[in-house]
Image (cartoon, rainbow, N blue to C red; front, side):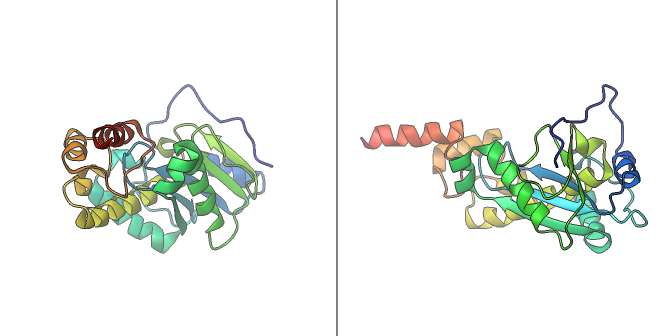
Length: 222
């Protein structure tokens, strides 16, 4: 049964460690998955989640909150994790984000990532203060988990690496928005391109800047 109360300590750790995993192992867990998502803030593209089960005997050095790492370092760590860990990556689409809202779509992507692991986990460490519903095993919500828990930091790195590449690929099909560098986030150049080029099929229509432009276009056409 999932634990709904998030774990949060007042003193933040400077680097993630294996404390959460060790505690779960001492309680009998053997397959502990860290789960995180990226892409809640962008105006375009899917929200992407990853679930990672680390091998305690083979943990790549340098795991940290993905936002603290360079792109080259994230790429190298993702390659290492693919070799050393069990990894599952999943997404919720733009259509699902617009239909469900970004929070529920993020939780959906997390649940899909968990379900996609090659072996079912028996304990989950999930970044944030909310848990997806109907989880298959006990779970802990860990506030700022990507900076405190190695399994969650691994998931954050894999998810961001995958999503950044996906946005670079989309940028080739829909040039002008700068997705190859802004990953769909509302940078000044992205907002200007939205006004000049218009809304693409990959933009989140429920997000205010995109919605406002669509509303203006509709008003003009009416």
